[in-house]
Length: 261
Image (cartoon, rainbow, N blue to C red):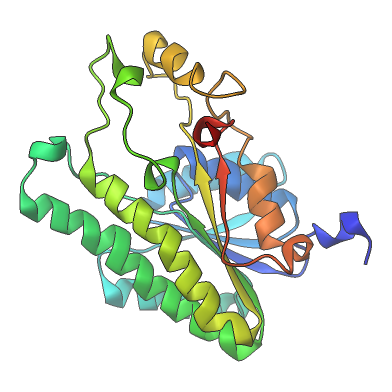
């Protein structure tokens, strides 16, 4: 196999959760463009159907599935549906996330617990379900989407002059946990030919970001900008494909150098 051919996802079935979000949409596009039979799961099925129609106009085809990562039965129903439709799963991208702590550090314990139930417990249940399927197949790639906020503490200075803050303890908690959970899964399934890696993005620029925040955040990176709508694509294809066949248990920051200082 040539080096370029090793990046192809032709013949592989990929399942990505949270595919309708800002980061998810570009990773869905990447999986489709690389040739994977792509399954996209989210709570918001209407958003997925709209994205499905928009991508189909460009010749990019994926199948939308509705599920609730807070509900174990819903998670297992999703895995059953994907297996019924495609017979296998070669790639899992754990991208779904919920941000319920609207009041940040001052929010109540129940809201923190809700975040953990979905972002930690739900992710565990789905990873185990798909991991066991991959173990029967004898191969697979699991990609957890972390964050630089799972690697470092919040920097209050990037929010100066805005109504934004970084005081969201649940996000730092579960994104930090997902990095070490990646190592656990890589070890647990390694002898079955399954790889597990973590991709930790930096800040993704959106239209609603205050200009001052964008400038202050960008100044913290080596590349002097936030993530755009294509920056995650190459890394997710690399980790999903045979190009990374001997890479497992790693965390790759895609952050323009934010965490390299």
